[in-house]
Amino acid sequence: SAARVGAAAARFEAHGFSVADIRRPPFAACFDGVLVSKVLHHMDDQGARAALAALLAVLRPGGRMLILEPLPTTWRTGPVPHVLARLETGQHRRNTDGLAELLPAGSALEPLDNIHKAAARFGIWLVRGT
Image (cartoon, rainbow, N blue to C red; front, side, top):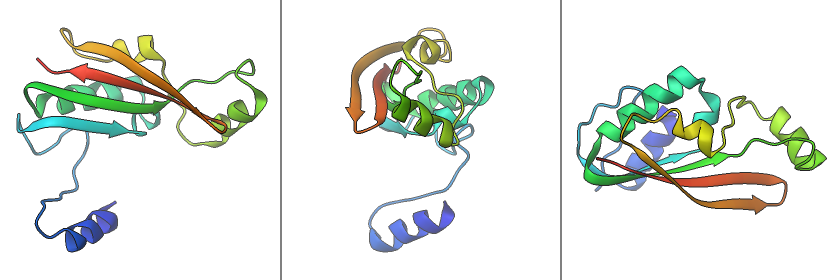
């Protein structure tokens, strides 16, 4: 939110902060790395595809994007994670194959780890820029 970014800017005056639409960031090829944390599951495929393409475009050559997202759940995962996932507002949880389908051609998605903490399940992926 703009309020949180404003608070961060006030606390860390030597650094730059901005608020922007994830699908249209106001930067071009200027970052070595991008962290995408718990946002894509709130976006449908079209929005997530646009966001990932735009975020890859802000990476310098050889840059990397790290993605942390909740994993899909089922009753087989366990009733508590499944119910919590249904209560959470993001309805577009994806596994590795689902994320890979959203990336532009030529992008490599590498699963790094799955985190199972309490009732939460998260996947971590690395995407290498071109």
